[in-house]
Image (tube, each protein chain N blue to C red):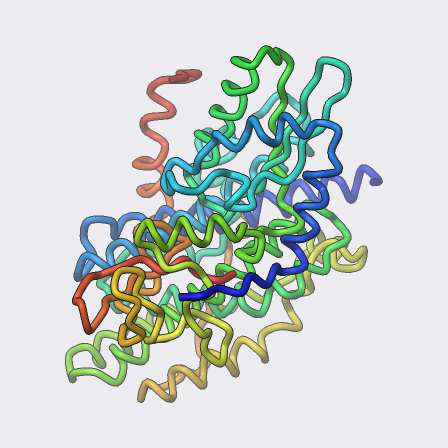
Length: 254
Length: 179
């Protein structure tokens, strides 16, 4: 592996790890607040899948970096400006409709992205993707069912779900952005050219929203910046909570 | 109920691997390691024990997680190390392998039977839906064997299970998902 590709791969793996840990943590905020017990447990399990992915990506990042950092250093010892997750993942928990709409947008993204990522020439990345694909089928069915139920539910649930769609839509554009790092990896068969995936994602999400009697928003606004470390104010607050124990007891083992 | 045991190809390969191994006694030894969340399943039965190698005094064990976030993996790793240490092997490495991804096809026939007796429906006790996922109904109840059941939640007490309830005996039960 040339140095340039190795550096890009490290950056890429950190990005994927950041997406996973931030969304996983956001979902975990529902634990003990779910609308009923089974749903609470279901959400906890989805959170675990995402946090598990994050661990796999960060372990690999530590191996690639080879500078003494461990898998824990990446999530716990970086500030929000050093995080590279997509903004969609860091949006706050909101109400249940908001969380489920975000979940649908993210699950649909995983559903179009992972089948490409699994073709990666990087064996570790391909292996993580292969595991994640199986889990994502279950995640997507659950978020899809909830969006259908809420969108095509009561007047109140419909209103809240549509509001969530309208508020989150502008954060989905950067899911399909490429930069030099990702282009280099895509050209070398390691990363995914996500710019080619928006049509498939849009078709999948539109079909679900329409069936749920919701309106697919137009593309009149977009917010970007996650991949370059320019985050919304939400991430800093989330990291404060997520990192406090680790940072208060550096090096602690039990 | 009479069972005609049809062994999946993957299971047959695992058995061949185990019987051909020059460390057969280590495979036997590790039968004592159970999944902490499914104490009726050994790591062999569950199919997460992938390989054992001996190189001089060094033993290398390879395991694979069922789901990405399976919280039992750290415990299993420690249990494997301890069992081998107690048996006199001091140099033990436990590797986590992600590829190929774990499949419920790797579960042993005994494991499936034990699961059912424990009150968890094994993967083959439901016909999957058209998407190849857990169906909305008709997983067989491990308690009264009725097919008149319904899915309550896509995710049960752990990520590898879905939650069902029997409409005949009314008992809730976990179904081990097919992946």
